[in-house]
Image (cartoon, rainbow, N blue to C red; front, side):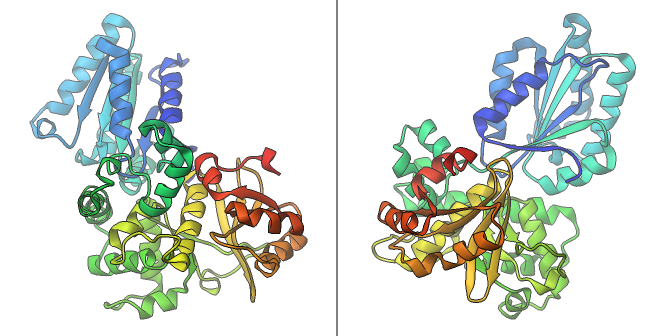
Length: 418
């Protein structure tokens, strides 16, 4: 992304928007705040909270509502905003699901430019569940007029705080069922929970957000690429292997393109290999990370795994959840592999520089060979083992930082952990 992007949790996002709406720009109006993020993570709730706080100065419009389809609806919204700004010196317009508005970026640009000519202080916050459609429109029409904020997937810490759950149980829940807040109340009825995730999150993201771009020639192939990723959490899979497992034919370029679309829709990330030299795209296969374990649980016919009964599958899901946590937090995440050695994740960003190994069960010295070799080659990256309590002694013997994976899923990493 060429424009600045902030990846925040729900409360951080709300606080940042409060601060920006309180700013007094040298020349009104202030930049448009484009709030994007996965479906069902609380974007509308953020707007609702702002609307309640701001009172009569604030106007809320849901572009996916029936009223938004009425002739003149959008024009009347801005007429009312101008009147409020003229009378009170400030108006705030909250536009929800803006991508549902035909030609939204051009129309938003026209209103912003008109407000600027009139020197009216009208702050605009627009949300959308499709980063793809928002990014395309904003780059083409809104250059220099907006700032982008991403409300990311919920963490175990947010889940624990919102639903008054113990941190350890929240972290375990995130591994098995993800952290979509709207799905959490259905956790005791797995069939109902799966129906919610599929119908309210997965199908709208693939069936509407991505396909609405009009650049998908093979919708069935797109769904198959997602299915392959969802069945291969935290695995390094070549594009050729993905190609061979598909029912429909597709070129390697098409498969790579569809993977990038799934990432823009906050569903799947294809991690690149860590390297100090440029490499051709096809020479290093991606490591597939599903960005919420809820998507794994909703599509796996075996359902969520239990550590005691299915340690291998639980280990893969745990690794996926830990890596997804870093990606969702806005860290740059890659992987490293030099046969037969491997490091699960290499992290660069606000958390610092880390080489990460994730283990759900007992750890032996041989399990840390890859981590130690990577640290020897790249000493600026601190090695860390995310594991259970019985793995701590193995980490200490190897001179590697240890952290309980449950604590990590709640708090993430920081420089102080080194």
